[in-house]
Image (cartoon, rainbow, N blue to C red; front, side):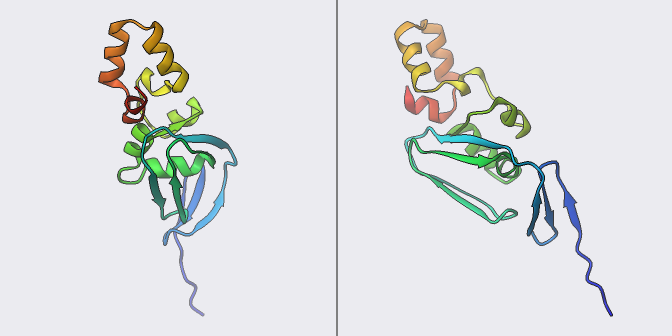
Length: 137
């Protein structure tokens, strides 16, 4: 009898088989993710069999492992950095997403910056903030 060999790749948050079939999730941590851009954001993570659509301003609660897997896909870091806001700094670090302090600006933070912030702070925001934050400005 011939046994089929399936290579299993280990990851701290999920394990996938060679053909991309999810075996199990080792981390059940859920994080809130918000689309802060003015457009629809769609992404796929084929390893996990996931396809997500975010309407402008929509918030979803997702597994942290999914975001880590998205960060490893082509264009995933760009989506996470520019369009989506992860409401958990620990997960942001786990995705190896290098963000500027302006990444954490939300609606109230932008309003506060425009009303009470200095001109230099506003210029820094325009220079270093992700596209979704600039959409808010």
